[in-house]
Amino acid sequence: MCLCLFSSVSSHRKKMMCRILLLLMLTCCVCAGTFEVNVSQSFYQAEENQSITLEWTFTPQDDPSLHSLRMLCLMVTDHKVSTLFELMGGVEVPAPEHKQFAGRVHCDKDVLKEGRLRLHVSSLRTEDSGRYVCDMKMKNDAGRGECSLNVTAAAHEPETQRPTGRPGPESRGRPGLYAGLGLVLLAASAGLALCVCDMWF
Image 1 (spheres, rainbow, N blue to C red):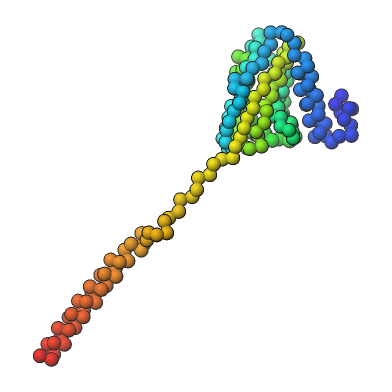
Image 2 (image 1 turned 180 degrees about the vertical axis):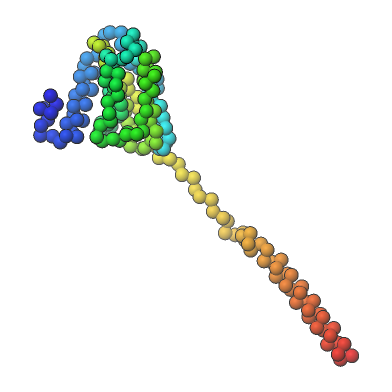
């Protein structure tokens, strides 16, 4: 259906628009039922290259296979929408084409049955900063949980430099060498002087 509506748009933009429409549909389908979605933490702070765990909780279901569970987790900024994780019928959907999070997101599927969604994001980048929205739908009920992540640049420690005012280890032994040579020359001069004195007297 999305392809028919946006036939003049590029394939990548079609997929993004379809996901946004799906997100809106899931939001509009929220009913006053027993299904609730909450975030464990509303704001996360981290540095680039670190790892972080984003967690949502939802009403546990009786069906251990999670066949009726639909999840769509997105990272939303003013400039783009990136898919972080998608689950349909208990099966994870492969990552989309943009692959911003490819190989960097891991989901603990074992805790889904307990009503918890834990997403581990590794090797954080500053462009990972944004709003993280997770919409879930179970049968006729739906819910949404949203949190924010701010990733700052890693602080680089200044390199340690050798002080320029002090002599290095190799130069510390030179005064002793020069003093030794001076003593040898002094002794040789004294011996030569004695020899000369013996010759003249």
